[in-house]
Length: 68
Image (tube, rainbow, N blue to C red; front, side, top):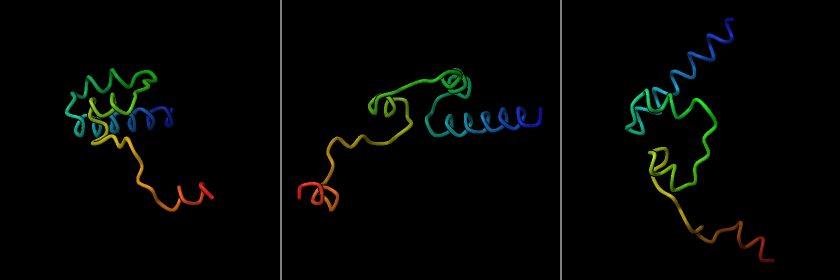
């Protein structure tokens, strides 16, 4: 019972944080997180979860190592 209460408390806090940062209402975030919800990068950006989608990766040490 203690674990269940803690999980519910954490879920509520996460939903509050998500609502504050996405501009969605707490109720909307709670509804949207009731089940698994898979989003593309663009959908996540539109929802407000992320700021920017980076479509290309700058060349760096990782790319150079792979090309050898």
